[in-house]
Image (cartoon, rainbow, N blue to C red; front, side, top):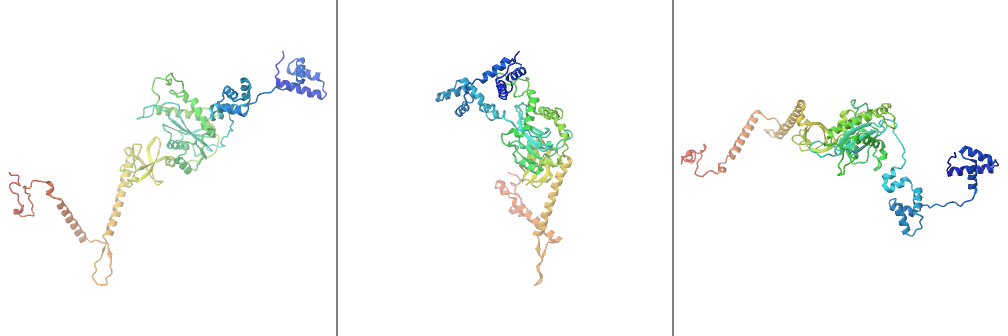
Length: 512
């Protein structure tokens, strides 16, 4: 049975037979060998040779012009509309079928997708270079993404909403180094996730340390001053990805896609799932899960992704990849990260401390600063304590008023007593300087001398003088005319004789 031989192969075989005949080789032998190799009869090969040797006029094809291409973009890839538009403009056009074939040859898949979907369509057909860091912690990629799952936030809010996830991924091992969930993505959430990734926590795994370079996206939360300040303090190079170029941080983008495919799409109230005719999601006839329950499920998935699931490109788990590298870690004590990686807000010191998040935080160092503006640095979702700064200088760690231990309460009271004693001491010193007097001059030519010594008799005289002045002040305040009693009432005054009001008459004693 003869095999089917395509036209391109036929032309190639005929060209070789011609070359052999021109070189003096027997044509019949070449035809027989070619027929045996291709599984066809010798007559078929002779027919190919005869048909190709006959001179034929090459078939002409319609080629797409620049005007055709412009019309193709203007009509969003509608070839039929292009044909009508060009014919109406007076251009000589082939049949519609021929124009379809011409565009199929001239337009690349990338251009066809770009006409329909814009930049995203073009990027689906572009070629990218693969690149990975040479060691762990050489580069971290960061991103935040809205989770397509409805959850119920904590009170007082009750309306279901979609939370946000912030991820830090090591480019070498693909480990999810740190993460945080929130209802609104802020720089405070980013700092909390970064701190979690840097601290080596044995309960989470033997990974952590400072990255050499941090590549976040270009969102406002990542571009905040708090992020720049923290990276500068930690010695981390901040290298934001260019806007609208998600492929420049492809590792974390791939983690986002894996999270959606392997975890989120199987949860109830997944917003990308099927919907009823009225637009409501198909799902259980109950309320969505709470945010706290979702956090538990999310933590379990991150642990599974890091330690159990083999990465498709690495061929091993991210944790195994991390442990295979011996690059030393740059660690920072947790007590330093407690305030270096915190968001900050300005607050005024009040009588009961600084107020933040509906809580009054107090510390002994705040005594005497009522009315001052200070910086409060905090960790989201953890208001057990805050760090208080004044002009970028650390003052103290403040704790909630209602959660003070006995030692913390005693420290606040002791600081208040120390400040009061110091101010009293300074005030007494200033008073002594103000009461300095010139010593009496008893003889002509006696030098003028100052003295700050107050004798006991002089101190008693001063006290008696102050007492007299105080009694006079009180006596001046005892004005009976302000009481507005009736004028024919008389009152007893021990300093007046009886005929001038010293003794009250019968009416003054209440008689009628």
